[in-house]
Amino acid sequence: METLYAGIDLHGNNNYLAVVGGDGRRVFDKRLSNDMRWIREALHPFKEELVGIAVESTYNWYWLVDGLMEEGYEVHLANPSAIQQYGGLKHADDRHDAFWLAEMLRLGILPEGYIYPKEERPVRDLLRKRGHLVRLRTSLVISLENIVSRNCGIRVRVNEVKALREDRVSRLLEGNEELWMSGRASKEVIDFLTHQIHKIEAWVQEKVVLKEGYRSLLSLPGVGKILALTIMLETGPISRFATVGDYVSYCRKVPSHWMSDGRRKGSGNTKNGNKYLAWAYGEASELARRFDKACRGYYQRKMQRTNAAVAHSALAHKLARAGYYLMRDGGSFQAEKLFR
Image (tube, rainbow, N blue to C red; front, side):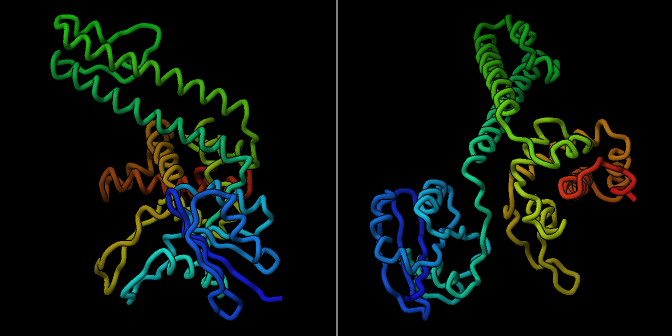
């Protein structure tokens, strides 16, 4: 029985399937629509010989990976940021990309990403939607604050803008009908988003299955229930990170500089990693700086040598390291170990 390997170059409404033999011989290739019926039919003649299928981790991989796994195939999610294939090539296309994925799988050099369990994905993605709504609300809050500042010469606090029980902002603009309408429109949308955010938070806390390490994360400065859930769900099994450095890099909390002879020669992919974990630890850093004595002291020491942005990033880096050990070993946060 011949050993076969497949690669699928996935796009928005179509994909390119390629199959190679154990000796690298090209066996089959075809462009298909994004329909599991056609993909299942194309793969069927090779099902017994296929030992793996490599799928590139694009924005829309869920349906394909889930469908292939349900059919019993061994699926490997390729990490596109770690695949370097174009150096020295004069021509490349979808066919070449699909065969390249299959070839790397055959050679055992395919950089792989983590396939998050299908049953846990919806809750995680619901928290991502909450983050999206929070960003939309923040933009509206800033816009409304600017309207009041420009036209009234006063500054309103964020909590006053977001207050649900009474409108403390629109009345400041009542002297002009157009300004009042602008402020009222912003306030109504802010209140609507706040209600939706609260509904999502309540739903997630009711449905989520808590994992080991969640309660330990609650002891981390700046981390409450929502941030702890975000970190827990976005991290997945902490065992998939061999070292704390791997985890902190995944959280986008390490420098991305290329150095030679003490000089900067460029930078790497600063977006390589999980942007939701980067946001979570960034939020924790800001809250810890404001409300935790040990974290504030570390931040101020950094500030004396650098600037606010670097100090904020350095504190977020420290908290990400602490988060790794809390999820791996359990226990409670100990500032003396982190800042010694």
